[in-house]
Length: 83
Image 1: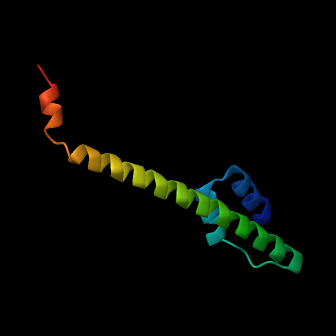
Image 2 (image 1 turned 90 degrees about the vertical axis):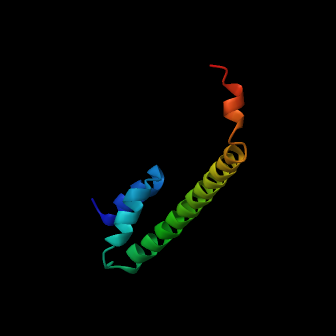
């Protein structure tokens, strides 16, 4: 299967690992049409990666807030336990 087809599949599946691996192994394109297609696909991959980056950042911020909330009341769990 050609690089362009594999890259298209990786984009449709939003498979970040395959996208990265395919970008690392990008071939030299023989025609202008192939190069333009690859360029368009790479731009779409960038959109996907930026969206994933934003989602990851948001998740990290939520975890940070949760951790801060838990750390601000270290003795509260001891008061609740009646064992």
